[in-house]
Image 1 (cartoon, rainbow, N blue to C red):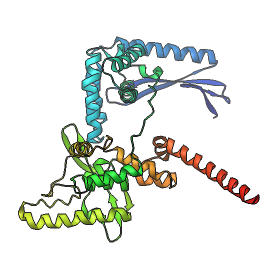
Image 2: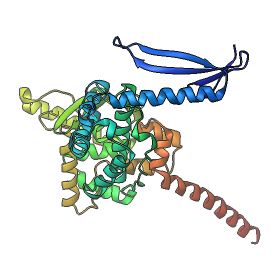
Image 3: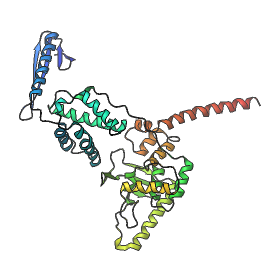
Image 4: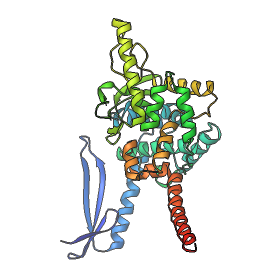
Length: 383
């Protein structure tokens, strides 16, 4: 038998010269999928049969009780279908659902939310909530997930997101320090509570959560290696301790010469604090911590960093921008693959997109280097 799909749910058998139409009636009371296949002699008959079937199915769906709202189904989707996602991601979804999506659509049934409603929602977010295109794109992705699930659960026939264009993301502008500013930053951070965190971010490009979650058990000064395996992040006001967010985020990094004195100094201070505080010292093993050994809240690190910049009259950047500073400098002298692995990115394309301008500068520098070499050679030939 030689069947070939010619349209969605329609196949043609060129040996039997018959058209096969697959009709999916949904699930029975036991949750089993109920399907049937009918044959037709002509394509016209097959197409017409499929249209009649789909129209009838749509009418039956519309005839069902319209009690399923974006609130009820959205909460189901978040609670059960997203039960295994990271706590921080689930918190972000919950904020989007409860603070934006549900208050806007209110009690409107899923079946009555169309493409126009989605576009109006996006406009509302931009004009009334002053959300960026990049944030609105996250709402788009979440709504796609909810409505796709609603189709699979047969609450609706077609997802309104199917014909909704994804919001175009705005280009991200990195706020970074140049090498001279980095030296000024190191001078300002000398002896400050943020010193270790600042050096780890600049030298290794670590995320804030990776710095707050780093323990001495994963620092090998003798072998000059740091193992990034843990993270300490925020989900609203709650601190979440756990593994780094992806497999690619788990990595081994070399401790460069410039970072060694900072880590050795932190280790010496830890030992001195242990002796001085005795039983009052919480021996939890964190590298970036209070004098009593207890770890900092990630949000507090950001606040301390901003205060330190302001006290020293340095240009304001986010703490996360130190990671971008590391990446922007690294990409000028190291292969894209190495930079991507060092930063813990899952894809090289992500590294390239974030540091695209720096890559373009590398290309320009390469061309200029050849041009200068040829000019020098040409000048010397005339001497």
